[in-house]
Length: 289
Image (tube, rainbow, N blue to C red; front, side, top):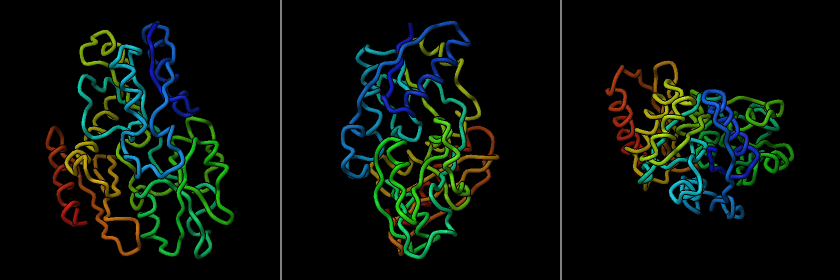
């Protein structure tokens, strides 16, 4: 029996079940889910960036594997910190779903001047604010169902398309935000599965759900994130598609924040990672971080 550690939200549980079903279909091995409560789950009363941002949804899930309570740890790839956790390895980057952000409640153009948009992401606030500086932003926390109930009157909420796809709720989407202006978070739309580095059996099992082209794309995006630095709190995004890397970084969400956006064609081989790191250094210089 393969033990899979995951958060207990509907999205996380469904993602873990997809991983387990994929492994079972390929290997015949059965699985069980081990539910874990993370710091991000416990602290729903405050904005994510005030309690650590990246990593607040993964540490306890990772510890379940490190402590021997589970064999695999399943995460939304965008939640993984840029620095690898000692003793663990990402054995699978699962095939990416739609990486775009979406609006629920209204489209950008249909929002009235001064309308309220709810999102817990400073990156999303910064990108939307650059297009519509008149908008008012408020924080948004909770599971998918809870967030869908919090659409402001006359306003909208911002979510990841993949989260709604996982739960079959794409009918709630008012608009898909284009990837050129709204570069998503690193790894958005992908599920990452970790195991212990010394667990050869788990690593072998995970090859059945690893998606090579997604792995390549996300690892290049994460090279950008790693070069920016683990201590950076600036809003940023990076996305690889069609042989190109698009990146975004800003000094904040306010209207007059410094913003950097760029796109580069990626060469084959390891040189793609050099491009990602070069763009990260350009971004840091441009926004003054």
